[in-house]
Image (cartoon, rainbow, N blue to C red; front, side, top):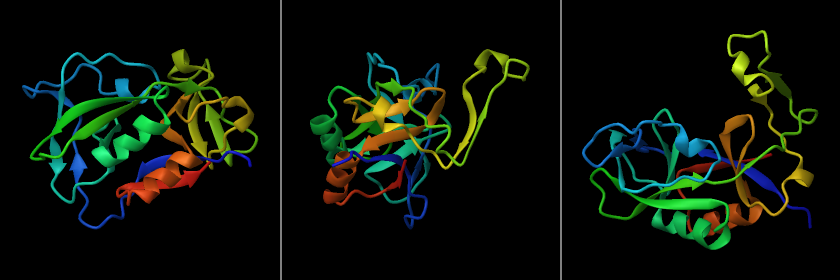
Length: 190
């Protein structure tokens, strides 16, 4: 059976959902690089981080925090990644403001160059002549995302080279999350 992959996004239609701010140090000081957990690279974290509440609401199993879109998971969601993607995902315990239940920052530690340009609805690339010439060849915009599964190998969770917003998960992980009663995430097949 062919493997299927999905872009895991927040479900903005969960009634009364909470929204979280960018991670901070425990003392409330901002971290230096809010984007570091969305690059698809392994990270070292030597201290616990704090996740402030931006807008109070219903705690979720999955959401992203702040402008950096840092993935935050409940224990039950984290257990799926821990069991099914130990080589692709790093889980760092975090303190979510006002919560006693455990939460984890998910850092996807793998990045793959596998966007299928021809199968996507539209792709736009940065050019050497553009404002961000240092990003030439990277994706400026991708609509109707599709990936080339032949380039995925054994990866089960990954980010995309040149287009970091999507968090791609294998179908087996999607199904395992759904069996837990997973709340807060939406899956779009890629």
